[in-house]
Length: 479
Image 1: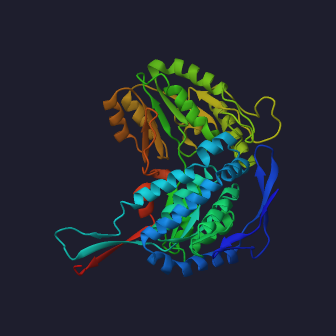
Image 2: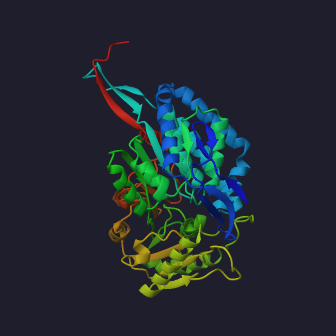
Image 3: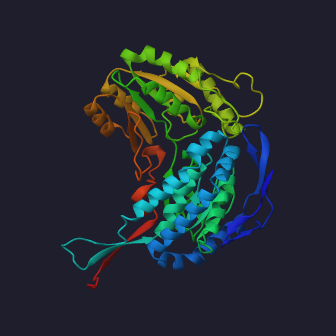
């Protein structure tokens, strides 16, 4: 049992004002694996005060010095990468091989991409030749509250903390209470990298507690949140009191449009992507839209692929998927599978209940529904589990109509060998990201959505600029 009852505030590990213990559950076994403390208002206030006091000096530190501190975090990660993978695997159920190959490496990937983006930052910019004495200064916004989810813990922590540090902001991180161990380890990296006291602070807590306290706090200039759309709405309301900036990266219900001329691996690629991380990814392609002429064979192939995906404990090596994070999520997914059955969708793989031979752990059978209509709840609501809905379409216009008929707009996918068609689809789909033919986004590409998926843009230059204010200056003296 791991015990971590301290918070990282003002460069030191301090106990909470009040002991408020929370048991972190290993979703593979349903047993407690750690005990942490949840913060209260006094802890939040102390962390914000430390960040506020540290802000003037950190904001005045030259960008290259800030970048040097960030490189120090990378050095700490490289020395302790296995600890990070093991923490993520235990706390949220990522299979250990996946934690090593995909989850933990989010840290160096985003860190290095942010450092590269930093090279292109112009902190004081000329307005234009028409106004030779005008300048645009990009300046850090101030103290920022960073609230991160459990499903890709280091992905989200790194996408927020590193750009905020590079921008010159100070911060308070509230990681998910479901996956706090990786963030506590990250705080050790920050400390051992020598980042000045008060620049980075961490307070464990839940959304109703520390999350709401940060959102309302008058000394917090900005909230950067990743999580559910429901929680994003609540944060926006709370933050409105102090008119702070709020950036939200929320849910998704991605459409994966498979045309008849798609490559032979398109269906397998789509099913595997949907089931990856046990379906716990906001950008998962959970709606597979299939051109009518290849619909029957695609359904058959998708069902066969899903039925061969194995489910097992996070501690075991292999290419299986692990459990979902907790009982609440497991129950929600089971309820939605039953909803799909009751709505009349055709269950072709998986279904309700635990996988065969399993009696403990929050495991979900990889599930595929066919003959789904886009007005069904399983097509409109984010399930956040390994559940795929297959929907037929008639032609390109019909595909666009169905894909865009959703409250979400994070990532859509297109599979076609026709380049002109792919380009038309990319422009017509209402989402912050479009990925085609299995090609992922390049380094420094912004991550974010539209509509109910929020409008954050994390990563690259955009990720740093989210933490900056624009100041217009006239009468700038020639240097």
